[in-house]
Image (cartoon, rainbow, N blue to C red):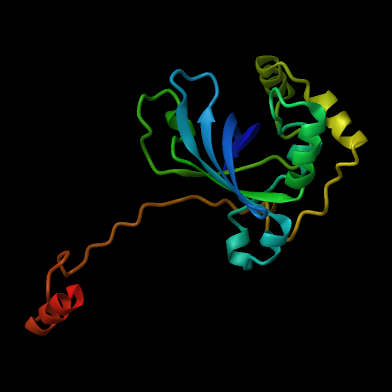
Length: 211
């Protein structure tokens, strides 16, 4: 299991940013899955999920799929992505893996519903940060104080451990090209009622299928 804290912003809304606690299970050498909780809420609110894959796995994705994924290179090298309480040498080994990884993240608790007691509305696609100046430093400092960490020092330590970011692969971080991805609720009316059989023959087929 991994415990990570990092920053997300809502697709198309760079000023809608938040920090997120990731509770992650390592599924295999190419795939990690995480549940995301909002820090500071009591009881902790389940905000969404993030799937993390290796750079090799990402390279095998079709271009259409790649649009849904964001890179982790800057998050790791900047110290934005942290493991609170983890000894430096152990953190270094984990970040050597995550520096060449990509995440696909959905928040089921919308940013504009953060003060609501229920997770209303359509889930949102969220992105990660890719360079300095994209997130207010005061927000980073507040996170660092909360967990007792120092992002600048963590970044320096990782750099000293030769944790370097490979180039971001084509297709990730599509928001940088001005493309905004959102989810929508598509409501279609079918002429056929659920489980309604159109003919006696179709009913017979269904019965036989139950065998």
